[in-house]
Length: 305
Image (cartoon, rainbow, N blue to C red; front, side, top):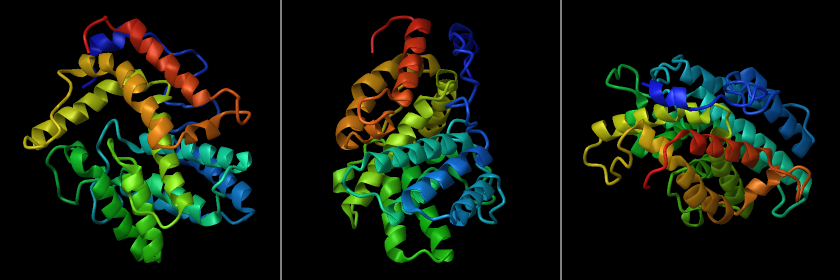
């Protein structure tokens, strides 16, 4: 449950940033608003006019999240919800478009774009519980959700005619989103696909942290961590936070000491493809994250950690 005291201490976001809208013109609660951005990226990068496969892939994931897949319950995690996936998907589509327009090597081709967009849509399907599982929420799968997402992708995509090589590449891209993933150690067939994996992991982080209501949703993330700890008492990753306020208080350090370094080094600095204009223009995602971090600093007491 969201901490009511914390909710009162956090100041409202600037009026332009409507709740749960990462940018004023795209509502990330609505797949129908994110989908056209992905389709436009596809058409611009590839020159193709037919983007029906994007509609189909959105439908696969949306149906599963809504509980309309025969093998899975509806998605019931409150932080890692459908909007979280759409935030990352929107960011990735924009990042890939910036990459293409920059002309940077490696060359972004049709296959890399398609696999990347499929992978980001599937990257958190590992939070889905099997049909009939009524114990807790999908947050209990936090330590293994990345592998479960890769398995879900294999299960769905193999039935939809994807070849083995493409599924393997999608699974490696999904594994890039692991909290401590070593991207260089993951297996990829091509350098461009590895960089798309970096782009996917970058978009996963930037998409959520740039959302206007990110600080307000952090207590929901704590709830997921706490549930995971209860269901996985023998996990090698102990609960790092004492309560929701502790998680919020430590978030600026998480951004400054962990995320920024991974974006630059582990993920090859691909966040710069979001600079507009390329290469030295402002980066709206970083600006929004810094604004969120400033709000958290201003709204939480100073303490150790």
